[in-house]
Length: 278
Image (cartoon, rainbow, N blue to C red):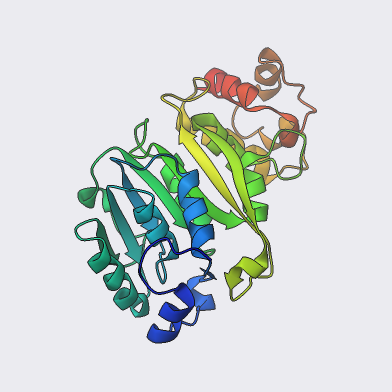
């Protein structure tokens, strides 16, 4: 295995600092530095870019991002056991790595970042989807980030890129595809991690669009998709009846059959319905 820097291999780092992965923190560590560098490259050209990383653990992806030329990496880590290992990386890359100890759901990272900003992370499984939804639903658009390069369980990754008519298609696909270009760029087997999770993983790359793909009010669109997919087996005239007394007429007006189900409807028609309901 080729070295990406002159720091010790990750297995050695984990042994030195006694960093056994903790299930309660959603931890699964990637130990192959060639693999973490490859993930870092999926984030694009990092020269002149600040990168936000959530859950760096022993710092495999952190090292990849810095080796690939990130101007500055802000790493948010909840597990205090990982801080000494991350401090060693900070010493190797002076003034290019800032580590904040804390919960990523509670911390506002923007005070420590300068645009352009990208997000790259092997997200802890237990908070990954919630963080993605937050990054896709800011009060104003475009968001603070240019792109997101995120590792998820493969099932979640498939939900992000799913198309109408598939079982994976739902609110997450609509949310991601309304405001970004989303694609799966890497697959990772369980054996790539320590300890191996029970499921395969995948890296998703999302590029922020300058404006949403189709015009719609974000809150109205969220209300419609929540109602439609919370009862996805029902016909839309039933699942959406609480949104307007004349919902059948509104559905027909935008070319949706009232007997259709949510998983059949493309993003463009959901946005058209949001406009007539607004």
